[in-house]
Image (cartoon, rainbow, N blue to C red):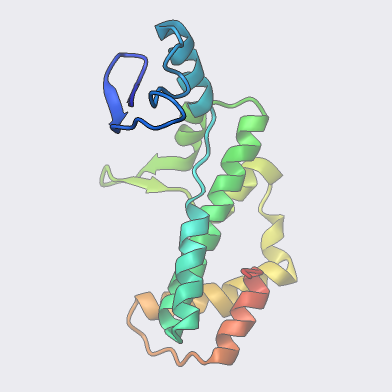
Length: 174
């Protein structure tokens, strides 16, 4: 059995023959135009869920009692979740991925491409940064982000299981 993309390139192959047939699978009888339409439709406005893989890593480190790594990955997971949700909201508002990328990335003074902050990303949908005054956001910054910053900048941070449970509650990770 061979799977080919609409350009005719082999993308997957397996030698299969059993009582169910020749191993010919879905799409093998589609015309090139139909295959191109199917593949394009499946890829359109796809938003990758990298937040899940980082949340899984955070949970793995928590289970291993590596609380410093948990803290780092829980913030990474949260930020990926924020950017995924903002991208989805902007797609629903009619922006395409290129327009969104132009909003999400900026070139700094040295010519390096940088992500905008999570606050700037949220403001793209909310319209302001007033959420920064909300007690839950303040708690997130003070009890989760500040701890992560201490860890990544090499400062001593004494994290316990209680600290991680507090972070889980704040980020609502579980």
